[in-house]
Length: 160
Image: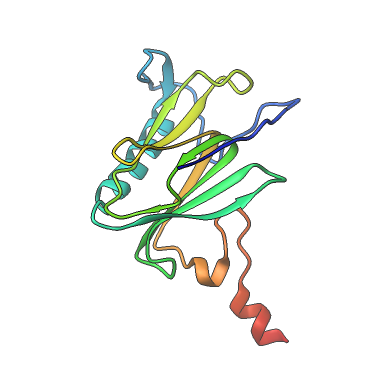
């Protein structure tokens, strides 16, 4: 089992790519208020992960400069769910496993950013923690490389 602990320092809060509108507050697992839009975003990624339980998960990409970690469930060319954890502070567990049982958990525990997202598969002992995340389904990683910093590789090849 591999475990990475990444130390990161921030002077400002990170901004997520999720809507953060006031009102319609709910609570997270700690009973703290959260925005309904964030709750819907987390529910959507968890539904997508649940729909792909029979597929394998594997680490796809890690960028040290941004402490950004990407994991793909399914085929890297599409028919997948790609999760990108930004400001990732800890990753532990296997690098590839079958029949994933991943889920995203949100809490207000992160000391610097006042929140934390944890991607976890308790069955295999996988856990990754970050300040924010984004995700996509049916994303062609072979063509674009990453959802954090996508680059159309096919267009680059054609232009050469």
